[in-house]
Amino acid sequence: MASLPDVPYVYQFRLIIIGDSTVGKSSLLRQFTEGKYLEFSDPTVGVDFHAKIVKVDGDSPVKLQLWDTAGQERFRAITRSYYRNAVGGLLVYDITNKQSFENLTSWLSDASQSAEPHKLVFILVGHKADQDKNREVTKQEAMAFAADHDMNYIETSAKAMINIDQAFVLLAENIYNKVQTGAIKIQDGWDGVKRGTTKRGHRNNGVYEGGPRFIPSAGQKKGCCD
Ligand code: GDP
Ligand code: MG
Image (cartoon, rainbow, N blue to C red; front, side):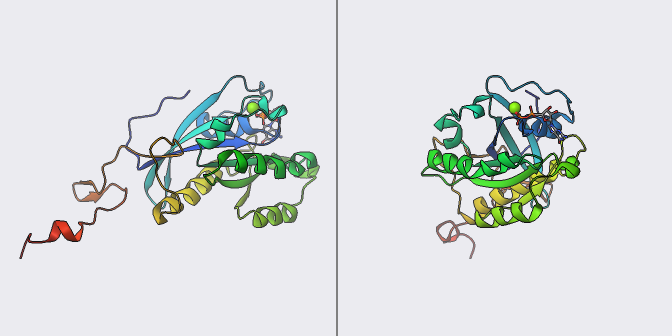
């Protein structure tokens, strides 16, 4: 696991990455967190987790905790707690493998059922975008699937470093917006979203550090200053 510099962040989101074996999930994560690509990527063993801070909504740092499925995807034996303790994730298929696209529906229904009562926020990721000449799934098909499931769609390549950060920032912003509007609520005993290390409304030399702004309640104002 990569260690993180001690920088403040507003929220922590726990994210999962699902899709058929060999679509490139571990490679996508490795490129994002370590800036490395391996031509021969070993199948993931055990539970693998990575972390990285990204900036969303202009300048708000958010820590992403990223859980990779560990070879179980072949057997669909991914545990319920894996889904239940995530706020969302990447739904990944390989653009050169039609079957991996066709399997998305069942990945999504497994995930949604297991996550209940929480609703997971996914983005659709068409991976191995460097292999356009071997494409088996058109962008139009993928966009239609994404629209049907109310998701954003992006094509990535770990090999050619296409849209790596963009994919994770897109997902993080989708979630961040839902947290800001209250559509996703932080709850004790749930690891999907946690408050970060910055204090609420904390100001540092007049520079706002992020986090929900502190608005004094009517009760606090009463009898205060006039
Ligand atoms: P996972 O089983 O979904 O975790 O897939 P892996 O990350 O282990 O990758 C499976 C295979 O696809 C490996 O041989 C990778 O080198 C290859 N691969 C991963 N990402 C890319 C990519 O962006 N482009 C191409 N052409 N191959 C990739
Ligand atoms: Mg893997």
